[in-house]
Amino acid sequence: QKEVEQNSGPLSVPEGAIASLNCTYSDRVSQSFFWYRQYSGKSPELIMSIYSNGDKEDGRFTAQLNKASQYVSLLIRDSQPSDSATYLCAVKRNGNKLVFGAGTILRVKS
Amino acid sequence: EAGVAQSPRYKIIEKKQPVAFWCNPISGHNTLYWYLQNLGQGPELLIRYENEEAVDDSQLPKDRFSAERLKGVDSTLKIQPAELGDSAVYLCASSSGQNSEKLFFGSGTQLSVL
Image 1: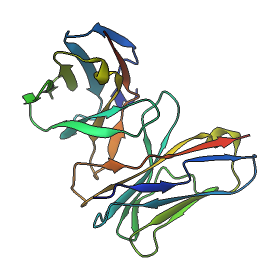
Image 2: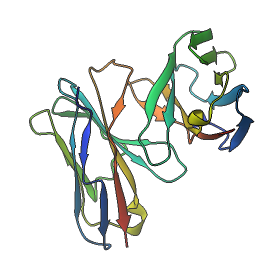
Image 3: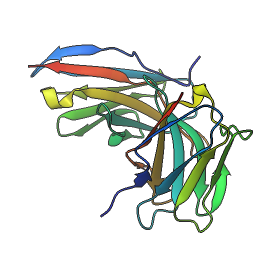
């Protein structure tokens, strides 16, 4: 079992719709969770972090965390073609080690 | 503020040849990371430095890979000899402290081993 699992996609949504990206993790003691966005041929950039159960909103992005289910999600409202990218879920383990999932490809169609 | 600098951007070598990658982190960032990213996969940590000390090199294949950060600023990652399976993107990242949550990535070096 991989430490951080994501559906590779691609996830296709129409412009203006809500995109829902999901991630599960195996290490129950993990405390910090992140979403990175990676455009094709570019390097990852941090877009959201979440540390406690519940929702965290930042503009069109909402991160959701459920530690009991070991589940993290990212919602993108009013999706735009510029949101088309690979979204990497990352989990911080003990010892400050950041473990990335394989990423989910998101395609927003105009 | 200048970002994380990496060079070269692309490198093509024949198998069994040596190769080196260079990284200069954001000024003032004490923590430096080298990641490897295969196509369709997430970045995988090779080594993490706190200043000049390698604090996590458990995933670095030490038979052929080496890294250094002698003055706690820029860093070099070397592969000798390179194998076909080493073809990947090598990403350098930095953060401002051991507990800093935000990593800043460089543009990476795309290595092709023929």
